[in-house]
Length: 597
Image 1 (cartoon, rainbow, N blue to C red):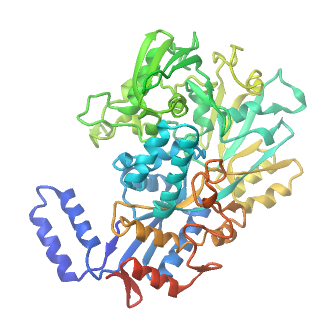
Image 2: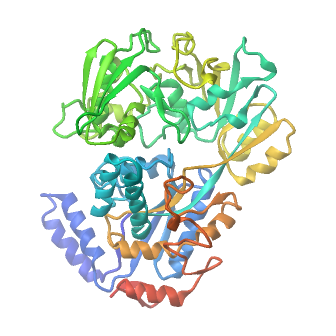
């Protein structure tokens, strides 16, 4: 999906003919050059394609995309909406960077400033995955992102505030709203749902058996509308999944964060000790003894060392170029070296960063070396290599998965996933665990059945009729009546830190221009979308850190967007304001179309 500008057919034929002469030398180079030439054609009309998910996958995203198209088109920008399957959209956006604009929801958002580094730093521009998928490059923001990694206290707060102000002005993406996560659960078999954060594996530890029966763990049945949760169990495959509770029940990390604003505490690690004497912090980690993988193999310090090396380069130095995992680069990029000090002791040495930032590196899933070492070869289809830059580790469905978590894989019959209690896990053995008291009782179930629902209404109906105990993926506002009509069903509502946004590919003209992106941001009425698309079940915001203590007061939403206020009111554009803004940005109208002057 390229940004195109309409040029005369004669010119286009001449350019294509010229390109064909050198096609044997470098086809991709010629195509890239043509794209640049077309992007800068004088008096060419601006044209954008918006990629998004179909209605049966995400009805909010498609409705947002169509509304944005209407505003862009009204302003004179030739705009199309292209719905596509989730895997295809993720490949286009996260792997191939082949898009103009895309509408979606940011996964795994936690309202923590350290997550802005991988999302926005310019070193992530060529990388696949959620490492700067927008192609955003801003040297001031880079400096502030690096500074906040090292700083603490008020100095860090000021740096993070500066980052938020810069991205609000330059608009690598336009935030349209933080939705309410609406879920449904029954209280006749399990209780304490209101305290369970179902976005985190630790939330499942807060559940209790109804009637206080803690001696007889039972079967927990849940529904999800996210089919890829069942069909692919590769924690590294960015086009299939986001990190979530199912993966984290299968895979452990050295540490886990207790709550959104909580600290990282030991998990697989029994303890750790930081040394902050030099510029580069180090931490010595003592791993719990007698840990085992689900297949019975011992988990050792070698598995930990292998994991950090593997996440940085899945080809294990067998390829001329590194082939990193598209995820976890923000966490692994701060680890300089992992040294084995003994069978259960390791030392991690970090780049120049604060201890708070370094702690993030302890939250990546630890992989069994004896399983993933076999997946460093180039990916193949029918025995033929498809790319030297894609390893088997990135495309395997990883079924059956071998982890070390409290639940293990049993089977995946059609349309559902079954996990069972892993009795050799340290939690189930009552090994001393530093953390909240509610972890001491372990899980209140010994079998987890995840069913795939074809729609949010189907998921809500499955809870209402008792087929499942809970719908764990967020439901839309249309599912609320089904929940309210059932006496046995609780409605669980919380504002999500994960926001919907309109993302711009800053690698392509005219989206390379921050002034043009700022203008596009002012063509979007966030308040109108919250009311019309989300039925009021969302909150508008300006920054990814909206709702946190990191948001400066000048970026708070009052009567409207303080940085990119809408050119109009109540969803109606003021075309006189739009035309003036376009002229200031170097554009004008030609037969109703926006063209470069």
